[in-house]
Image (tube, rainbow, N blue to C red):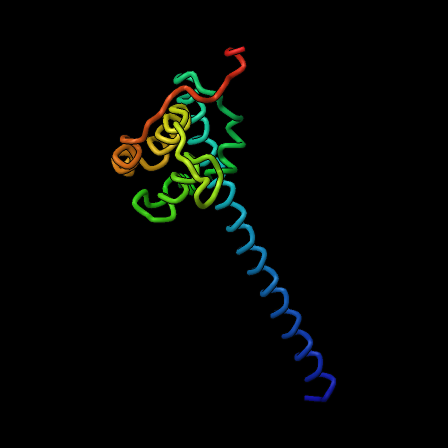
Length: 151
């Protein structure tokens, strides 16, 4: 063969290889997008269930897409280990007056917050509901948040 024949074969191989790599990349990207779309549908379906449970309980409920964005398919932060020290610190911070040091005082937490969280756990990770109820069952709660109907 001549030098020009070798060059043409080399260019042809590079072209075929480039096209093959591009097709594989497009196929992988398509699979990722399809999986994300499937996850979105699952998270939106769970969010709709949670929204209806919140409304049935007489609580304010955001749009299902907002819930899906916040909790995803697996419940996000709501379904983390309820025995974790970080989760306990979040509960303690949620039911304090926000001060630090000697000014920190416990407050009576609103029961709707715990009800809404229990409904979310029941929807996304029901196996963790008992631990959550045990952890928060001894806390003093009340009707402490003023709603629009309380004027």
